[in-house]
Length: 134
Image 1 (cartoon, rainbow, N blue to C red):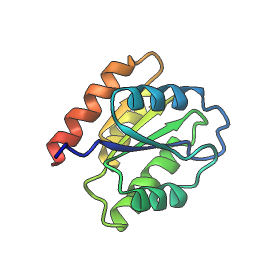
Image 2 (spheres, rainbow, N blue to C red; image 1 turned 90 degrees about the horizontal axis):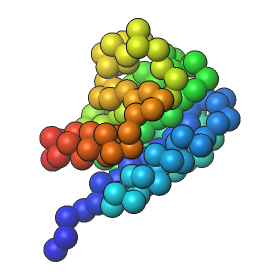
Image 3 (tube, rainbow, N blue to C red; image 1 turned 90 degrees about the vertical axis):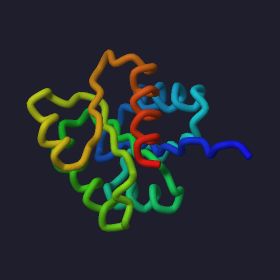
Image 4 (cartoon, one colour; image 1 turned 30 degrees about the vertical axis):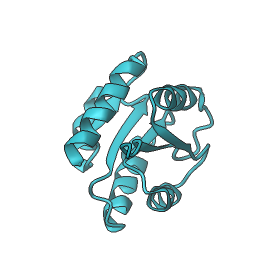
């Protein structure tokens, strides 16, 4: 019997209409052997949390460029917890000022990745975090 693939939901919360980075990350994770579910643009925190629950994911990756990260990301984490998904690893990427990272981590985000982060670093981080949870 083979081990279950890591399942990761990649989502674009809010009104941000730019998804090239999310698609690049989704493809890199897929090419690394993970099962990737991409929800597309303009997702609400409720839509993301519901999709994560229905898809039984290990990781939720949120890509945001709009500047609404301090509202949308903590709300998404809160909804995951309310759904009983405390063990889901939440990561975020995009344009997130360094000054906001500690507050996001305090809200439950495990990793924050800005522009220029190597995809291999994200892949290794996801594998490491998921293995800690199992």
